[in-house]
Length: 386
Image (cartoon, rainbow, N blue to C red; front, side, top):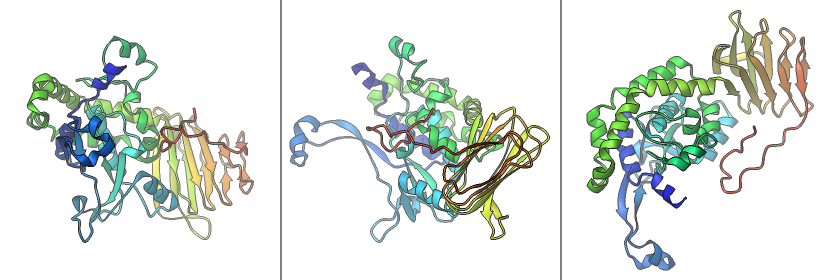
């Protein structure tokens, strides 16, 4: 167990920083430093004086005394951004920017990318929240050896950084719920384009330059191996992106907000299902540009779950019943769920204030949902409900 401390790379942050700039992902400046032997350390002086480590800039917005991180006018944490995007469709996350950042996480082998590893910024000229990745302590992690190999089938997060990608479920495990909430509106064509765009700036020269950011003593031990691994992963990035896409496409979560909205779910002739979520007009019909729209096909997707959240919402299902299972989860408010034209959908509402129009085999579950209790040492992570 003690030996696994060496699974983390001590220069990971400075190498990741250089590669981040190459692919256009916001990154904070990091430096490898030695903590001084200073009386200000007080009771911790004996333990920590002279310790080698990494120090990184804490991103802050523009102010009278601060030029701000890349000109950001506002920077918030993960708790605030989720509260805002739930409150209103006026607040949105730049899903393409997040996808680019998540594919880059995979490229670095950085598996520990839960909600608390991100801050969110408003940049000049862009109304959507931009992700700022932080805390690269698990970049280039190598949980190798016989014992880890025996444990890995049951704990896929124990990844090994090398020229080949490990199982995507382990590499993306800790960011699972965030990915399923914020990336499911993007179709494969977008994933493919972004993966290919990221390959071009990651030239051999850029990779070599980034790896040389580690101290010469580190490079002598691990530089050539790391560079070759990064080059191999660059070539395989579109394949890894496809694996990640398919992982999220199997069961999809589509989210509305706490405002009044209309979800129209249309089943197509080719065993497809299209979800469109729009603002709700006074007459109950959709109005304005959709806040969510995507078409799903049975060859990729088994199930779609539409979360209406708060507000007086309306969900309408149309078309011939297909094989993609549909679940519509009502939230607080006086909602209307209409499956009379199709049937076979699963509706959920525990409030007792929802008007449900059933079709053939429509299922309605009115039981209250009790969320699992968060794990004590990671209260910021929404607990999994298998």
